[in-house]
Length: 371
Image (cartoon, rainbow, N blue to C red; front, side):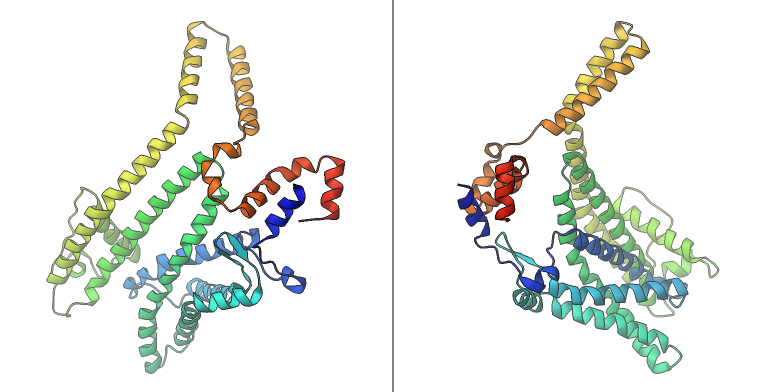
């Protein structure tokens, strides 16, 4: 039976051999997760800084910190372009690790977009270095518009978030992570809408009145201008008001469109967060109810503080032990029956091989025929 399980879990599992086994990496490897988290950080910087170009007259893009971030971002995505040829991918539950198949798959999917975006990144940097020439100024203006294409990388964040979710085993922490993700999305949407609201002032004729000319002064700082725009954006998503309002047709149309967007999406996000908060409470509802009854019992019977502390510490210790010892059986998960036999065999092998190898016979057998 053990040999049959080994044959099943080897079936339909393309693996790399020789030199390539040290080069090709799995999507779920730890170093790949760290690399993807670095990519998420650079994506977050793009989400913040690219919309902030609406404040370009008050934002010094040639400052040393911003130039350093631009170089670091371009270097990272250039490295990611090369490393993507050495990362396996999933095909119907099987991890494809053969180098030529990985390269062909990447060339068919993300390569063209990634290569284009990396080219745009470096062009933007080199155009910025030649800003003294008028021709380069024109190219820099075009590249500023093309930088928006870098936000297409946000699509990749979905796989990173999914990978993080799969690694979180606590249902409580998974729920907290989902709530944080929704809140982050709401903040980013308001950030983008605030920057777009300020950027509308560049799209109208110079002689036309705008909210920037009406409600802001020439000596107002960048932080005050951004805070005012963000305040206005937040009022569109919540039942609140402020003194800033549209002063021309374009701003009025944008306000109406944003209100309709907020009406549809914000209520959905609020209900999702509410459901997650209720789920968070239900996870510990039974335990909290028992703690409430115990606390009431100890108080009504005048138990001393020393004994109360001993009781709580002991119960906490038992709770930790029970959470470790309690295991979910395969029969308790009906969805596992949908998996192919080879994958179920692989699951059983990883689940029970550690315990089986405690016996000398199975330890030697596993050493003689690994994997």
